Length: 108
Length: 122
Image (tube, rainbow over all chains, first blue to last red):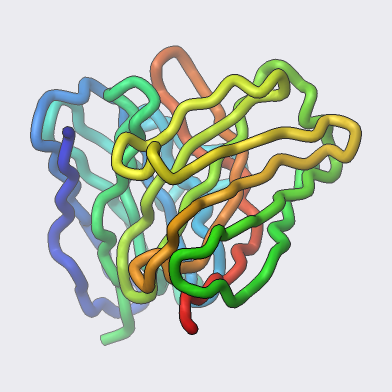
């Protein structure tokens, strides 16, 4: 099974900060990776698919990069509504989709 | 736009069967372009994909849950359902339904229902 890890598990940041979250796969997953934002008490919402494609309607301050085993989600200038938990998800293994443990971004 | 809404009992006794339904609005579940998934999240934990189904009832299940899960679809009601047998406290979680999207071999989930909490307790 492909295992997904994320670092850090949590971080504190201020409005306007540049934030980078890393997701690592236990084996090569090419670009079969998506990122989600989950605000407290809410369902996840997709931000990025295919590692670097911005979902329609998602602000351009969000970007994704990487391929193979190492991936990055970057928020270029953190906004108040961005304080949330971020999850990565792989789809390399056919019809066995797995998520990372999540990274919580809170206010410094 | 497509919206999903989960429904079902919020409390299930250990060893019994958990049953949830997802109602799709704003679009047809019979759209052959999509599969429909169930995903859960235990309190303070990560997301776990349970399985998926399409409008003709073709399914894929998580290997770790396959022995206990059955999904079904009712196109006349624009609904799909989840049954999970022999539940334990470890199955206590918020259960989400979601629509699969695909681009080549990339699969992701959008949109999601709001989620429903299922507690397994006697």
